[in-house]
Image (cartoon, rainbow, N blue to C red):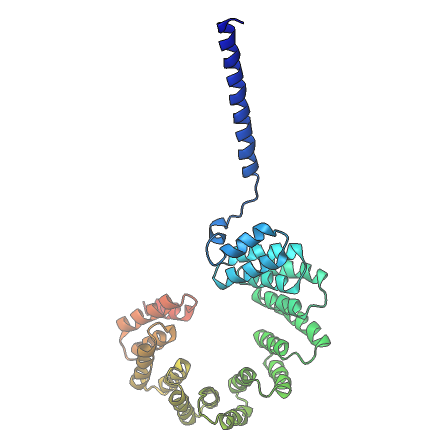
Length: 344
């Protein structure tokens, strides 16, 4: 064989080797690119999630691992990857806690999606009390009050002693304007669990707002049980009641009692100041609201009431400034914005 032929042969052989290597690399790259990658890879590879991520790589069909990582992600304020993990766990195994994880996150940002998911999940678990309750909450978040009430009624039909469901139904009925029926349901719940402090407070407030004298005996019973004199709320609810029936002297006395029991009870200050404002004692009211402002500089209600007092005293520029401060702290406080616009 001539040297030229040999060189051409070796050159051809080198080209074949090079092409083979390139093809091999192409397939390796292609395979790597086909690996499923998470859009949350960077987060999932960091502590405290990294160890669970490694375990999931070893056991990709282990639903419990996805659930544990989802809980940890949600606890650390990573709702999007948490939702993805809850959904993966649910796809692997239909467990109630996985569905609740999905619905809880969806309800916060996308209640319509939560409703769709829960309706589907309940086909898998039609007897799940918690999923039905979550669906009622999602309907409520979408202002589909009648649908939410319907779900509550269905739950109570099978579980008539579910106090939490009674509370929710009462809140929904109150939202619809059925205040008497709302109170009636709360009273039924109270007879079942008179030791439920949260329920006592809800019922006391409803009584006070509806000028129902039952609030006095209920709050007195709470005060009697409070041997350490720690709770300000019963005095506050009595104050609301007296204010609503125009017994302003007793109202002020009760709000002062509430403040003595809890120096940081901001709502009690606001109600006290509002009574003084109604009595046209604008300077006295202003001092109360300014005190609230020193306790909490970010409480929008304080700025709003300071502005009202200043407006009543003819201090229009100062009032306008504080109405705007109130709205700046709470963009849902449209009453403050409207007052500022009118003052302009």
